[in-house]
Image (cartoon, rainbow, N blue to C red; front, side, top):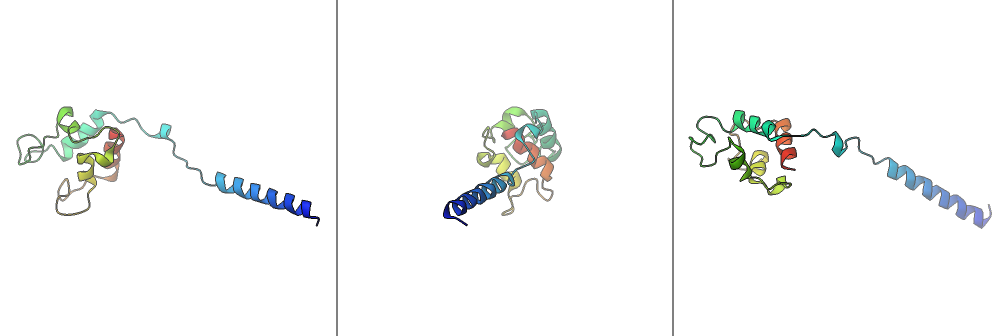
Length: 118
């Protein structure tokens, strides 16, 4: 093979390999595919898991009330679940301060809350 044909062959091989590599790294989920999460969805989770008698209902041991938008939003940094105290508490896997105690939220409920914060 002549040197110019070798270079053409190698360049073609590199280009085809690059195209194959780039197109193989695609993701099926798109932002548009994610469900729209309204506060009512989030409030339902808090009302059934957190704002129960004796906990975060405004009458329990905790001073944090989680049964209305105003109080819930004080523990949330809009657009940033990682900086949101409420979200960090419900995903925590350390220490004895897991919330809710003895019955962590399901992955689906944690995801709903995360999507609402985002």
